[in-house]
Amino acid sequence: MNAWQQIDHDFLLRFPGGLSDPDWLTLGKKHKSVNNVMRLCAEGLAEPAMAAALAKDDLAGLIDTCRQIIGRSTTVSTFEKMAMRNYLAFSDVHRPFLHSLHALLHHFGPGSFADFVEVLQLCRHDHNANPAKWPVVTCFLAYSQPFEHVCIKPTTIKRLAARLQVDIAYQALPNYDTYQRVRQMVQTFRQHSTLAAGQNNIIAQAIMYCTA
Image (tube, rainbow, N blue to C red):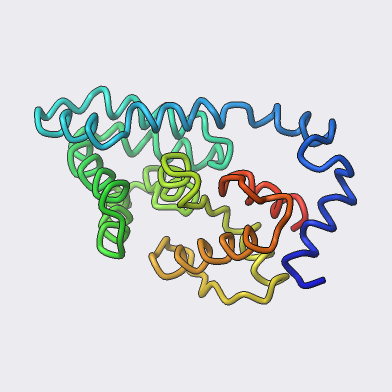
């Protein structure tokens, strides 16, 4: 049994019924907003909807969608939600924020990732309005494309990486290199896991987090 398969083993010690275990299902009810967040992303942040709104400079609806996504995301802390709310209170950041988010989601790459993080730091002079944190940056990706992207919770992901002896080159400021390393770590787990077979990355990460 390798380190990746050990995660399945440890999960089943806690939840013998696997993903159908009553205790697991009860735990899942605490995160029932996940489906709502994915629906918000699928409907409100889809490429055609975003492109049309940005072309007309009709930003209010998109901003409201983003507020709801962050507000309902269980992977974003209360402190981070407050920082995002304070950030979006500055209306002059709405346009660059949405354009960079559109690029991140629909033209993903090192450039769009770095640009999005930079835009989230536009209000860093106000320490209560700096949402450039891993859970905020990555929740938009993970909930928009859950089979492709991952959501990073720093403390837990560092503990998992140490357990699996994976170098994620962690830095506190979100960056493309660390993101891709974490993404690969989750994909590797899915390749070795029976429990995560056919599941999206949100479920795969939940399995991993429960054994961290």
